[in-house]
Image (cartoon, rainbow, N blue to C red; front, side, top):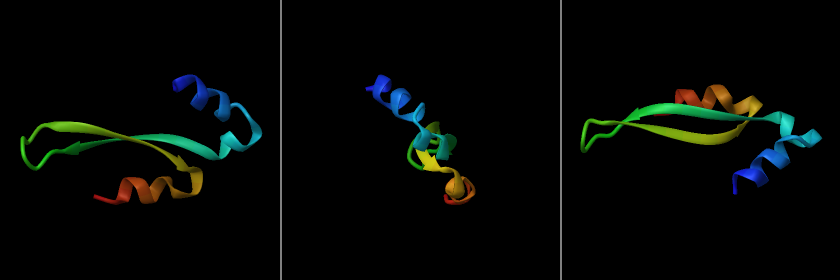
Length: 51
């Protein structure tokens, strides 16, 4: 699965996306988790602003 993502990022259209990783605290266990998402470059700030 990861090979497909890497292959699509090397094309001309893949340069407009960024992989964002955010640390989020779980309300149940109070442990931290990582939320990963492929986001368009224009929406990176929106990804980190949401809770």
